[in-house]
Length: 339
Image (cartoon, rainbow, N blue to C red; front, side, top):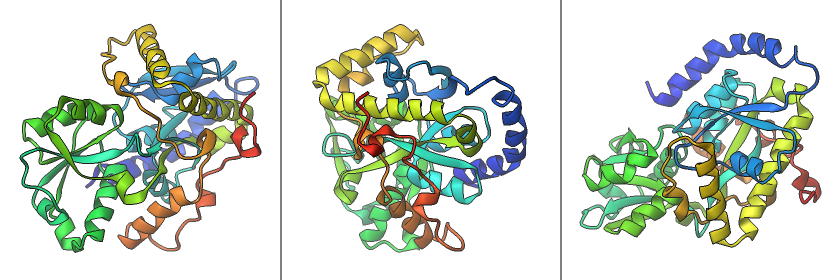
């Protein structure tokens, strides 16, 4: 049973509990909640954390409840009421939404462009150069059933591998911070490296790419933050403040010199006191988000809806992107965002 299937099963089992406990937490409070529980990432600064530090969240406060290594687990926590928002690969959001989880994507938070992308890396002397060379090999990625797996399987299929051959490529879940070391120690044959972790590995030398998601799909936003639908109904102003604040943080980072952004990220890590190494953020280049202020487009969901349908993971009619995401909480949708 895959990790994501376990995620779906857990969500299904806890949805009833979610509706009961959610009413007891937010509904009893007077007015809209102003504190958002979330999970972070070790050694990295999330866009909401950056937005909060820049003062873009106004009176909305973030409450860190721990760290998470994969998007499916993050949005599972949101769907089951353990956190108020979570972020994941858009294909994972599609899976959860079609399993009747009451969640909606509201703003993009990561993506791929010429500067920031996910690459599939091998050591320099590896014999692996083509898609067919991956048959029987191990590919390490941060979580199964998400971005890295989807992109890999699309690439393999486009390069002529049959479903049976693709099934012979072994996928291994590895925490991002351990991926480079696992590749160099040859515990895996290929490592999926993205963002600052990829840049650090490249700077260390001795690795090369087979392909990247940017080469395969062009510039795109790959993941979104989601909220539960009941939370959105009770707290629309809080969500609008959050989404627009994240959008402003995206544009702030896009417009500032790289050195300014890196310095800010290092300062945030130092202030929050989680005993983390700030080395990773020194390799930051961009968020990779395609849309202005994190605006979401249909394409960023149709790509994965079509892929999931083609692989037989979606049953029945394909969901419509507009049923899974909304831009209505994002002030950039109406040409705003600067206030």
